[in-house]
Amino acid sequence: MSVYFVYQGITYDDQRAGGFVWSPKLNKAGHKNQGFTTMTLIRKDDFILHSVNGQVKSISIAQTDCFDGARPDYLSVEDAPWAEDGYQVDTVYTNLDQPLSIREHREWLAEKPKQNSAFTKAGTGKQQYMCPLDDEHAIYLLDQAINIQTSEDTVRVLRDALEDIIGEIDSEYDSVEKQAIDNLVEKETGTVPEWTGEKKPQEMTIASSKERERPKRNPKVAVDALQRADFRCEYNTNDRIFERKNGKGYTEPHHLIPISKYRDFDYEKCSLDTMENIVSLCSHCHNLLHYGKLEDKIPVLDKLYDERKEALERVGLGITFEELKEYY
Image (cartoon, rainbow, N blue to C red; front, top):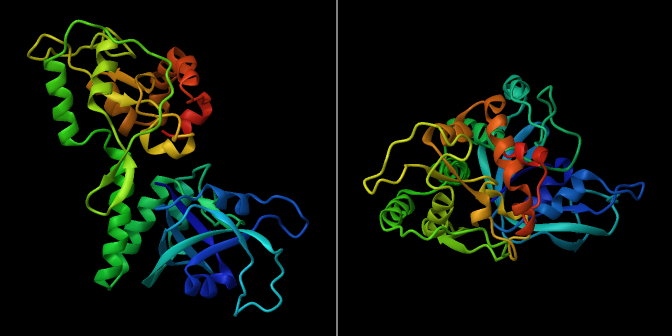
C-alpha cells in the first residue's frame, strides 16, 4: 500500500463527482511529465490525498490500478487544453468536513524534507499533478487532519488510513507470527538451510479488519534465515545476545528490503519474504533500523547490503544501496 498526493485545481469538482483521477500522458509540448508518469504507479487500495488551492479537501482509496483512459468530458473546464490520451485511476472519495491548510504546516514540512514526496525543501507543494507521499509526511498530515474533523465518519476513514500506514512501517511480524517463530525455533533441528536463489511469487493475505490485501510473512522462512546465521547478529556476530531456552541465541528476523515495498518489485514473480532478504539481528540493531537516526543506520545497512546484494539480484530483488537507504 502506498500514499499519493494530487494537486487537482480546476479539475477537482469533476473528478470527485466522477470518482476518479485523470491526467494526460504528455504535457503540452508532447513530452513526458513526472507528475503524469507517477499516475502509472498507483495500484488498487492505495490512498490519495487531494489538494486544491493549498488545502487538502478529501482522501480517496484507489479502486483500480492505473489504466489508459481517454480525457473526460469536464463540466467545469471549457476547452480543456489536454491531449485525449491519458492515465486514469477510479477512486472512492471521502470529503474532509474541515479542509487541512498546507500553509499552516509549511514549517514542519520544511524541517522534514523528503526527496521522494510531494513537497519542496521549503515546505511548499511541488509543481506537478501527482506525487508520491512519504510515509512520515502522510502520517503527520493525516494526524493533523483528524484533529480538526467534526464528522465521525470522516475521522474513521482517516484513522483507518493512518493505522494501515503505521502498521506497515512499524510491524515486521505481528504477535501471532512472533509466537510461531519462537515455537519453530524451539523445535529447530540441526539442518542448516541455505539460500536457494529461487524466484517465487509474493504470497498475499487478506487483512480481516478492512478486507485489504497485504503481503504474507512466513514464520518458517524467518526461522530458516535465523538458523542460517547461526542465531547470531549479522551486523556484528560478537554483539551480546541472550540464549533461548533451547540454548540458541536470541536474534530477530528483519526484512532488509521492507516487505511493505513489495509493489516496487515484480512481486507476482519475486517475493520479498525470502531468506535472501531476511537478516538475523540482535534486538539493538533491529530496533536501530526501525527507530534510529539514518546516520546511525547506514553502517549497519552498508554491511548487510554488501553481503547479500548479489543474492538479492538472483531472486529478482536487485536494488542499489542508494535506493535501499530511501526505505529507511
